[in-house]
Amino acid sequence: MNYRLHLAILGLIMTAFIVNEADAQRRGLGRIGGRGQNSAMMEQMRAVSTFPVAQIWHVLSVRMDTTDEQVLQLRAVVKEASSQKVALVEQATKTEDWSWLREQLEEREKQFKENLKGMLSADEFKAFEKLAEEASSIVSGRTRR
Image 1: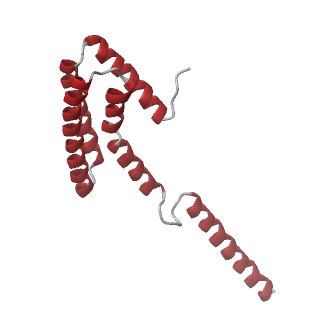
Image 2: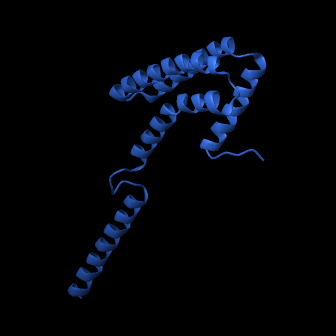
Image 3: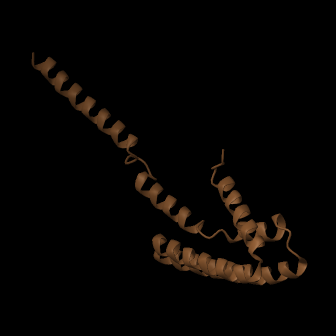
């Protein structure tokens, strides 16, 4: 009788241990890189991709019919925006404040578009916005139907 009681208790303990371990793994607690780390990484990725300077340059220099003179003017503005973004990302990396970075980049993007309005005609700016939105939807995996 004592033997069976000990086996039953041991069986319950083993079952509880296995269930607990499986639950921890399912929630990401039993291994490195659980949900907390993944959500922080996703927040960082979203913040860094807020002001897509390289994508904007591609739209302005390749996809649009801009003149050589316009491309030279735009290059200087895009280069400055790129330098600012790199500096902001470096600063945010030190502090790990991704919401601050996102706010800063959104503000820089607004300023950039205001500067762009002065460099392009109204029709060219509309074409830029349309092409930039298409490029953004392709990159993020969204397509219009």
